[in-house]
Image (cartoon, rainbow, N blue to C red; front, top):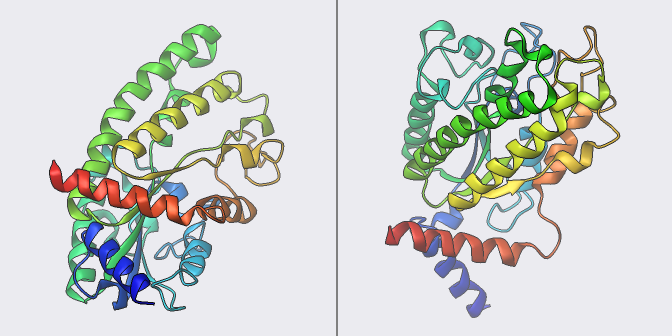
Length: 296
């Protein structure tokens, strides 16, 4: 028992948590785009709220079962904004925050501003933000879908356009996760990838290049996650062959709504839960990442 206690204390120090943090109330903070918010069909006012749904709700339920949570579900703070890009994360150009009740409709602040506010509030209330999830980058990629003439490009040209868009996305994502780590250097960080819904709408303009695009964005997101000491959550394999069943891609007009449905979000939450026996690997990763950040 003494060995376990010493290990927990050492782990808390390695993660940069204050003394006694493991006995303090916990907070799970989610940020990102519509996937992070849990957006389904976009129907207002039904989808207006704090975002304790989508994959966030079942994952928060699972967190309560983890050591250190004492069977208590963490406070959920979701600052995700539908339509967000890695660029609009830092400004108020995206009005998707009208869905999230944490925001004051059209008056802002930006997502980074709201994130900063919530971190201060949670810490001021004596809660430890022990877990952070991020879902970002998809809108930077999907902007190509609406570009004039994209459908007329050859597949090689479409792939080149994807590569160009993802260069900027990756640079912006690195900055974003650096901001998160500055605010929360010791939190467990989960970075969520994307699945390809377009096999469920094969006539979509984006369908021919979609698999290449999703493979490329996930590769880049995984690299960004590793650089920030986070854990990349690869959801793509789960959806293969179930795209129409677990998303709204087939809803009229087909190919328009790329969001998961309730079944899809449940699958994402399952992907976020580490496999049995992975806990020790995760702990070592957090310790190493914490040491690297302190040394930097």
